[in-house]
Amino acid sequence: MKVFNGIEAYPRDDGPVVATLGNYDGIHLGHRAILDSVCRSARRLGRPSLVVTFEPHPLTVVAPDRRPQLLLTRGQKIDAVADAGIDRLLFLGFDEEVARLSGAAFFEEHLAGPIRLAGVHVGSNFRFGQRRAGTLETLVDIGRKLGFDVEGIAPVEVDGQVVSSSAIRRLVDDGRVEEAGRLLGRPFALSGVVVRGEGRGRSLDFPTANLDVANECLPRRGVYVTEWIADAVRHASVTNVGVRPTFDGEQLVVETHILDFDEEVYDRRVELAFLARLRDERRFDGPAALADQIARDRAAATAYFENVSL
Image 1 (cartoon, rainbow, N blue to C red):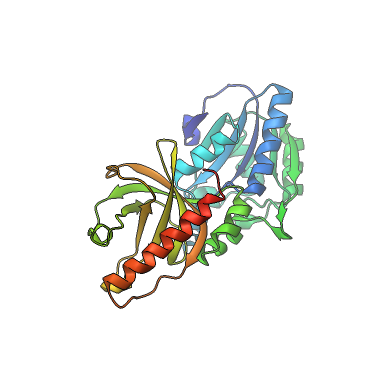
Image 2: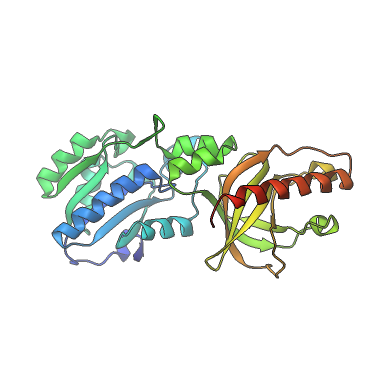
């Protein structure tokens, strides 16, 4: 997949494409339905497929107090879009000038000039332009004028719930990572680099790896069954997200004990997939009591993975 940073980087006179545009934070099952539709149409027409996404998130500009904590890092978004089979990804800059454009002006002046659109696929509830006044019907009218087809994709529901990035954020924030994973179509995951901690875990006979997390959206404080993914290899693990109250900690940390693993991991970039929540974080009477609980957490994680294939 080719990645373009800014509209000025997109190749001119490169032929028509089938595109979609939006924030695409999470690349959840609803997003995948749109991306699958784009890919099918692009293959049918013999054209490249394109995702246009905004950077920064538009609310950063128009309503900073309502800007959400993003589910994906930039790298995770690139990987997820590529996994969906898309040919091109354009990060489109968003600023006050773009925010002031009407929907028609955005397409006519900012998008359809540099990019030749054969078709645009969006969710049926798609909104765009100044004050989000543009609707799917508005886009159909613009498409007729500029010569591209428009297709609206119905929302996806899981267990009676409409899949959305905001719904997934709420689930993650509440620690309900299994439900979040069902809406995403894959486990919610954090990305980061392993850094040195205080060595508390090793002193308790349960060495842990501390992750300097790049993501904005983190699960609720607690202990989770996780998968540690490095260099395309998966390892069973158990992870604490919290402040280590037994040791009067104050800084939020993400620390992982990898089951049956004893290798150097410092400075490695890893993904940490959250599979199930075990318990809340709590204060223990001392290191011995904490070590006993960690042993039980490890046993619970081991039991979980006896029924799951990595």
